[in-house]
Image: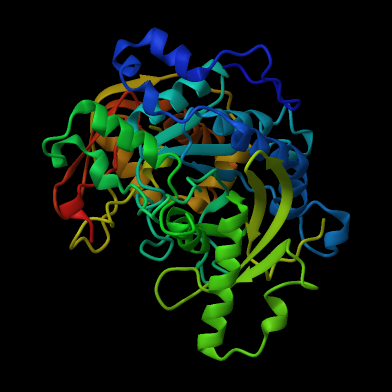
Length: 326
Length: 125
């Protein structure tokens, strides 16, 4: 699949999965388990087209006039996509952040990493990125569980001003498995993906389990995997970092409900900041992050689309002490 | 897998592993491909890296020549050094090999340039 940016043009494209399969017999047996680009993928792409350039320019690089006395930054960006599947989003973002395309990011440079739990998806992502002539490193892993913790190792920063308690990821992207199972089934966890741990299981059953992991979000609200990713985002996002994540309406409702419950338990009197003007487009999440040091995350809806049977939205998740100025 | 990515990898999710960093590399195939030198990118990326880990990794895969053990303070002005760092960060890729947990010796395979950090059920902490 060759992606034209910045005007995403998919009309004349073949599926990246097919492209992989025809080149590699090994992959041909497993590609059925790789999630192919669908309406949710395209919604994330549309949201990025709306939001990405402003986020990079105003927030990550502080080049906005309205940011007043903030110095302009020119740090290279670390971009990570979780659950990259066929690799469309990673390829598109890597392509749009090249300096010849996103002109406001001249000379900054990016390092992109795509992550998937499904080895076949990792290969598909790698192949899609190759076809699109973009540099993306692929890691086979469970969300960010493979990443060194910001605190566990010291980094040779000359002037440690922030206490270095933020992570390194500037842009995090996730089109997660968001569907709830009919009986609140758990999300498919990585260990069942390893064939040596499954007894009496045929290859077909294994493949269908891997395929299920691409859409089954887990639990009665389909948010198990999403919440795990939010915990990691709270820890691993850089101070000005942004996490773009897709949710279905009942995912978001569950996050808001759990936030209200958590604040009731803590006897916190600041219910006003859960929602802005009772807006359904914004929630302040306070329960995410590893261990005792919870780090608040603001979650703002930037684009929605009604498709038959479901309403999907893309949210921009970020640290609330860095205000939106766009 | 570029060494820039390796600099971020840890096996901390393994049971009983305290730090799990850095992972040792045993490289079977290494690919070199020329990339445009972006001095700004390299200069600004260095503070985000664990320098010692980068140098160790470069030596492990046989490309450690010319990288100082200690990063000099005025590296920003040393274009030759920055070009060497550009080479090791952007142009060198491990295609096939292994990553090894420093505490448990658990092996994570690298194949077709993709490191596999997945764990079995009984390995997760």
